[in-house]
Picture 1 (cartoon, one colour):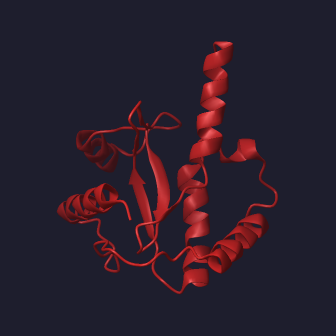
Picture 2: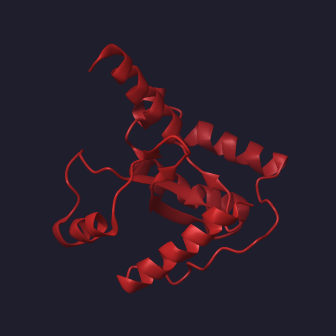
Picture 3: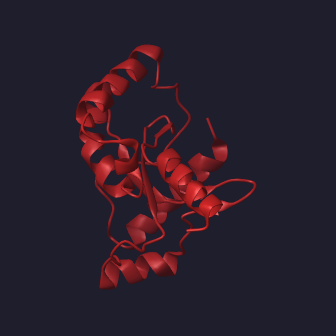
Length: 151
């Protein structure tokens, strides 16, 4: 378990409560056993293949909100557990990806999301603090390719 992720996730729940956006089923993460056993991961991959059979790799680029909203109930059905649709950004030692501020989020809530320009990311968080992210790698690969060719 990534203790830092659990800490940040629980802080995000507090911010979500502050803005009255909390789903009643959302709870804090705690330490627990992995839910992504080999058999569960296989079921999720099979469901992914069926759900997104008409999608190409390119179709996942920049579609984190759409793809994860679509896939969330399918993962919940497989796990028999509530899964949290998570909006945030990715931190690494080298760089932060899709980083936005609480002020940005407040602006989006009051004015609406800008079309195709929001620096935002979404994924699914399991109660075990494991994540399922369908779009980061295709989006990262596309952006890296665009930087290499100077677009």
